[in-house]
Length: 328
Image 1 (cartoon, helix red, strand yellow):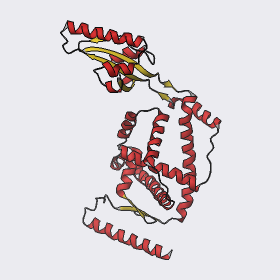
Image 2 (cartoon, rainbow, N blue to C red):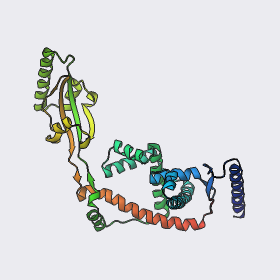
Image 3 (tube, rainbow, N blue to C red):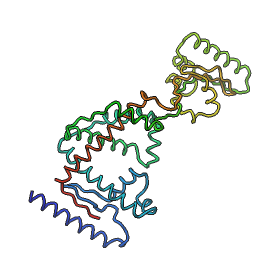
């Protein structure tokens, strides 16, 4: 224990000397980007790490927060640094207990987030872009979170029980949060007309389209027909165009799919460049989710709240035993 204290004292002295030397080489008003702002046991927290975390949590650069309000900037710094100190303490324990999370575990967790929130991969990437976070950074955060959950399960040794009435009450009080936009998954068979001015070719393409429509009415598989006949996008995948939010469809497409149910097929859509046959392979009208649709997401929310409370309580006790030094 005494040797450990001497080592920490030496590290602190060395860091202070390095910081002072760097300051002598820079303008007095400049803040050293990589200077150490805290020591946690044998780990360091740098200013760069602190600034990155502030931006990840707020979506704003620290200097932007400072420009708006010095008071808010200092408070954000204190709060986020406190969080990073707790994270370092937890990471030390995770390493000590040899807790590991695989990439497969991360993939499953992200898929569950998307499923509970009813968002696509594109939606997720858009949300991350809004917050200035890369997919790689998000995956690292998810990995850290899964490790933290394993740590809590290992250390706290308490079960979190969510009663049905708690879940129902949350739903009743937050119904407005559980809504979704209408979505459709579309497939297409496209028959190309090489010469838009050729009536002979137009008649031939139309006759081919009518033949395909008859096969569809006779019960033949749309995807198989798309693979065989389509000259358009997604032909190798059975004509699948993917999932679309209804507001993202252009006016023509929206009008075509508006009255088609899931599984419905459009009549021949004739254009100068060829003929399209559209199929609505899936259709979600959106709107307010029922309790049954929302309950899994609610359980995740409530579980997370309980988890955070127990984690904070556990880290508070662990922090009493840790060596921490804030250098501001």
